Image (cartoon, rainbow, N blue to C red; front, side, top):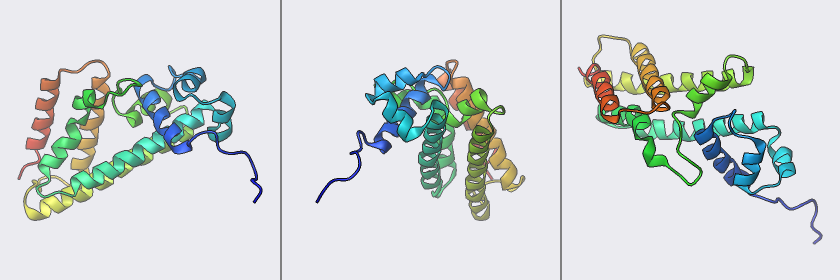
Length: 199
């Protein structure tokens, strides 16, 4: 049987995963197309042909980042009791040294970094991060509502408001982590936030 078309020169999914690591460690502005070509060992024309320009490549990486994070968030919060699972989610930025790869050290949350670097001047980036933050609060709200029903979490505040506060905690911690982090102080702050949720 005759072969039609050109064979794919690289694995698109694996290439996007590697690009995600590079963008996460360096940021959008500091990562050039040549950096991507060199790190991914893919021809420039192939990158453009598959992913489009750098901005579209970056936003694809951010979407992949969030897909992976959301699956982890849902799985982690499907726990009883909930508070230890919430603590794991909130302390993640304080444990970024565990995620070091040969590409570099992750810098905070990639969604938060995108907020700082591209929002509000880029409408598509704004939509991507807004949806990510909305999904975080929806998922955490559902978990908090379940925990309120069992008496584990205080019912002195609406779970929607509690989830919004936790979004601010995790994003603030993630942003501060980019400037260097006193891990013990960060963990103490997270524990304070968790204690405030106890029934």
